Image 1 (tube, helix red, strand yellow):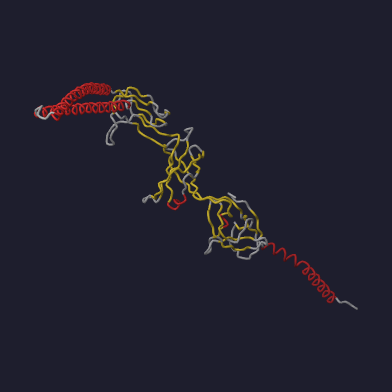
Image 2 (image 1 turned 60 degrees about the vertical axis):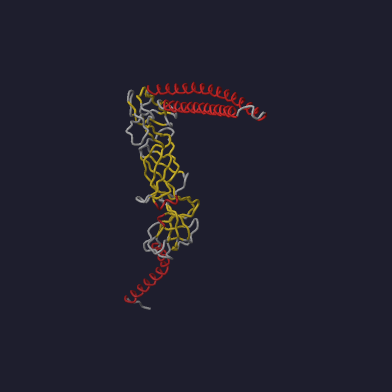
Length: 408
C-alpha cells in the first residue's frame, strides 16, 4: 500500500484523538473527586455537654454599717471625761464618756432623807397602834362584864351605864382602825420614797455613757467641758457625744428587679466584688422587704458581708453576683449555636455522616457562654454548628471541625 502525505496526516490525527480519549476516560473520576472535595464546606462545631448552669443578676450597692447610732446622753450635764476618739474600736459596755451632774447627788440625798423620815413616822404609827389596841382591849373587857351582869341581874346595872360602856368600846375600836390606817399610809410613803430614790439612782447611772454594741467611733461631737442636753425627745436639739458604727459586719442593700423577685432565697451565698480592693468577698442574702417598691419596681434585698479584719469600709462600692436560679448537670450548648432567625428557636446539628439536620429546641437558663437545652433531638456528645450558617440548609453535607469557645 502506498501512503500519501494527506493520508499520513489523517492517520496522526486519528491516533491523537484516540490518545486524548483514553486520557480523558482515565482522569475523569479523579477530577470528579477533586471537584467534590472543593465544594464540601468546613464548618466550626461544638459538642453538646452536661454542665452546671446558673442564672444571675449583677447589682451594685454601697456598703453600710450593720448598725450605726449617735450615742446620746439621757441626762443633762457637763462632760468631765471622754475616753474615745475617731477610729477607736470599742467593745460592748465600754465606758465612752463621764458626765458631771452635781445636783443629781443632792436629789439622791433628798430621796434618802424622805425614806428616813417616812421610816420614823412609821415607827410612831406602830406605837400608836399598840396603844389603841391596848385601850380597846380594856374597853371591850369592861363592856363585856357590865353586859354580863346586866343579863344575869336585870335592873342591877342601869341601862345608861351599859350603853356608855358600849360606846367607849366602839370608840376604842375606831381608834385601832385609824392607827392601822396610819401605819399602812406610812408604809406606802416609804415605798414611794424608795421608788423615787431608785429612779434617781437609775438616772445617776446615765452620767456614765457606755457603748451599746461593739464597733468603731466614726465621729466625735463633744469635748471635755461641753454641755450635753438630755436627749429624751425626738424634737430636741441635743448634741450627741459620739457616733458608733458596727463595721465587723456590713450590709449591702440591693434593688432586685421585679422579674427576679420570686427567685430570691434567704441564706443564698453570693460573691461580692470590691473593685477598690481587687478582691471578692463572701456574702449571704440575710433579709428582703418582701414587697416591690411602686416607684422603682424593685425589692430591697440585704446581703450581710462579714468584715472581721475591717478591710471593708462603709461607703465602698461593690458588685454582687446574685444567683437567682441554678440547675445541676443539664444538657447545654454554646449560645453561638442558637439560631433565632426563624419562627422558632433552632440548632444546626451536624450528624456523624456530616449531614446538617436543623433541630427545633426549647431553651432554659442562659449564661454568658452557654444555654440550657430543655427539649430537642440532641444528646450529649452531638455536634452543633457554631460558625456561620449562611447558605446552609437541612441535608447539606459539611466537614465539621471541633473548636473550643470561651467558657466551655
